[in-house]
Image (cartoon, rainbow over all chains, first blue to last red):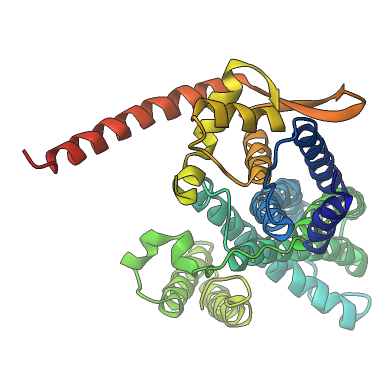
Length: 290
Length: 109
């Protein structure tokens, strides 16, 4: 049997980031195949090692990217639940402390800001990753650009999810004087516990990021995820502005209903600006616009 | 036969080949060649990525065994694979009949 050929196959798989288990399995099966052909004295064309390795890796990358999005969502779901629960309990834990009452403003203020912004970015990136998986559920191979977008969305969702639970614990520490002890304890304990599934999901995402897919094609934009949105606006930037406007209206409405129209207006403007800024900063990175 | 045409139908061919009996990669290629009377001649290594894909989709299951002192992976159809094969067969029959009708209509009388 041609050991140099098998070495070539192993090298081609390794260079493209195929995990050790996949490499070992393919090379073992190829060896068995070649030995069978040799025993029957039958000439065969097994295939170009680089082309075969690329085929394996392209399919692994597509499946891995979809799995990474699903695993990230599964890891983030309990974090979202804990976040929502702690926000609800904040009222019972002596209400929201004054924002300038933290131990150190330089730490407390970013923690409080992250507590508002990070979960929204995490939710948006995670939801977009799931939407893309849904749209591509029947595709066994995805363009390299699309694999990259899925990996970026999953890793962004995880990173901002981690920032959310980190800022929960930090918020509890910084504003401890104004918070009930049990709220702080829940924040510390759950933050530590939730870090584990997030880290496990990050490993899965990183494993996929190592695969060097090579299928040509582009990743498309927001309209691949939400084709129906074309009814609202024809380009991603316009859609972003419409969405920011809708978020502002809902936020203001919620404030007005709660009898705090002034605060509602401030929050509405802040939310709309945050949507536009996030779209400008992350839109291309997350494959929302070309 | 054009490689692209074969590639497009490789999943159906593999499921149908393995449906009769569990088989390892080399045997699968052999059966494909025999049953197609040599029409399906492909770079044999391309069968493996397709087998991995079908296994990931839950249509095949596989396990290692020993044969002539070396390790060998044997594939078998799962229940889901049997259902997928039936569905693929029905779709293929419809396709062949439809293409046949269109092609026959184009023949000079």
